[in-house]
Image (cartoon, rainbow, N blue to C red):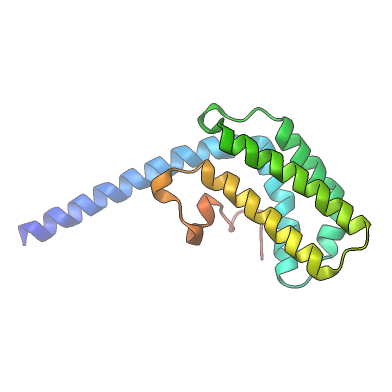
Length: 153
């Protein structure tokens, strides 16, 4: 019985430690305003596309490109400033422009959906690279909260 109590106490302590570590990573990540700004437009265009509604991305692709460029030009917080993050941010900006070009050229809905999905994956890669490695889980969307204000399904 004492072993069970000790195990539960240890689990409780580990849980509290995990929450406090997640809180620190999230507060640093949320302080990266350019990433937050990009995320807002991404969430408002990507999630409707999952339901087959491509109108948001078609009408807001210029805004998405603008936010991606602003992200690329922004100062990456020191905790996340490394080659992998820089490369992924650059790819996000480049691929946003490619998507814009394809939309302007009359890409099919399936092509747009596939490109937007790939762009969303790059965004998640950035968030994953900026998250603690022991909490890196696709089920949790790499620390990406799909339940915050302005981000609904």
